[in-house]
Image (cartoon, rainbow, N blue to C red; front, top):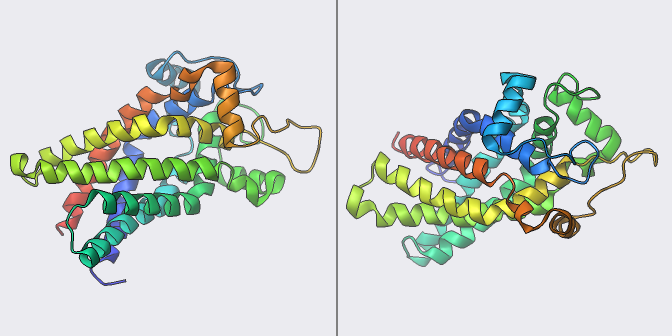
Amino acid sequence: MEKREWPLFVYGGLSSCIAEFSTFPIDTTKTRLQVQGQLDGRFNKIKYRGMVDAFCQIYKQEGFLSLYSGISPALIRQCTYGSLKFGTYYTLKQATNEYLNVTEDVAVNFGCAICAGIISASIANPTDVLKVRLQALGRDKTGIFLDNNVFKCFRYIYVHEGLRGLWKGVGPTSQRAAVIAAVELPVYDYCKHKLMDIFGNNIFNHLVSSLIASFGSAVASNPIDVIRTRLMNQKHNRNTELVQQHIYRGSIDCLIKTVKYEGVVALYKGFVPTFVRMGPWNIIFFVIYERLKTI
């Protein structure tokens, strides 16, 4: 790797962590909304009416800190996923553009984004599983995750579900990451390039481009996000038969059962917090990222 390329990975990870921490409570409400109605004794009841109701109930019943349940694996995830995703994308894009002698080619950006999304999401999947489990559990539950400890959560999954448990939902997670990256990164770069003549390369350009990219990626990725969240959240004990069986056997089975029992609209559960979070997340990320690149 050339000397001028490695900072892209560092800037990507640092910007991702700041954006993640700043918007994490909204992500917690999204996870709670997506798992409710799941064919599971713990989550089959509809408890929250929407993002604001989920936020208020979690705050009142479990305390403010519960909104940050799972923040540790989330930040670890961004150190790996964020660094690899953005660093790989911009490094591949730069190398491909130089090789093909093109500038802001949509096909090149699209291909590089898909590769970056799949690679980074697959590697970081265990941290995503931990994050979802802790977010869904909250702080007022009883049982193995009583003290909301990420290490006990990891140990429980490894002992009772094996290494496969840590890569549960890796299929839809990779698909979601590919969709988000394929929409978000090329759209952001395209909008930024087109708006350069109007706004120039400044913070307002980055803000508008981020919002447009966020809306597109939220619409495209939400159904896959619901499926991956449910697959990650369901538990299975490999050591005994007297436990809850797998509710969903895989991505397709989860999709069919979700639509069958809850309707197509269930695939867009959590869309509002997804977009409400994704907008600020991308604004914070790209503004910081663009500033770091000028150092």
